[in-house]
Image (cartoon, rainbow, N blue to C red; front, side, top):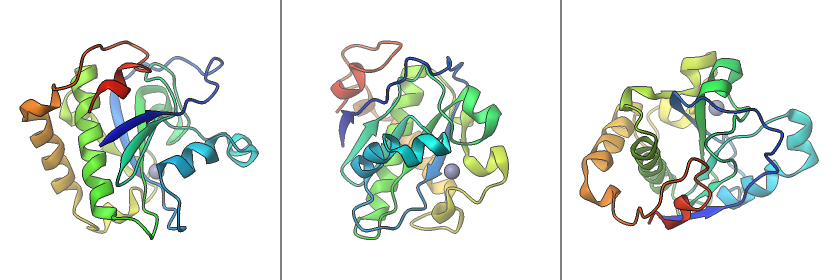
Length: 180
Ligand SMILES: [Zn+2]
C-alpha cells in the first residue's frame, strides 16, 4: 500500500490527545470517489462549510493523510474528535472494496504501532455517536468488524509492520510516507 500526504491547512486546528482510532467508511459510492477524491473534497467550500475533516482516507491502492496525528479533526462528535484519529475507508463503486478494507486494517495497525495504543482503542464511528458507520462492515460487507479487528491484530503481529519505518515524528508528516 502506498502512503501519500495531502495536508489540509491545519495550523488553526486544535490539538489532539490521541486515545484511539475511529473507523468510518465514506458512504460515498460515486464512481471515482477514492482517497485522492476525498483529499480534494476536504479542500472544497462544501467540506469547509460542513466543518468536516479527518486524518486518513484509504482506498484499494493507497492511504492519503490529511491531518497530522496531533491535530484534531471533526468526524464523529466531540469525544471522538478530541481523542481519536479518524480513518475513512473508501467505498466507491468502481473499486475493490475488499482491498480497501484490507488496506484500512493495515493502516490501523501501523497507527497502533506508531502511537503505542492498544487494539482495544480501535472503535467504530457507531460506538461514539450511534451513526450506522462504517455502514458496509456493520452489515458484514466485505467482511465483519470482528474480521477487520482480526486483520489489524495479524498485521500488528507480523514482522513486516516494522519494515520501512525509519523515522517516527509526532506530526507523522514525513514518517508515513516512508512506511511501505
Ligand atoms: Zn463515520
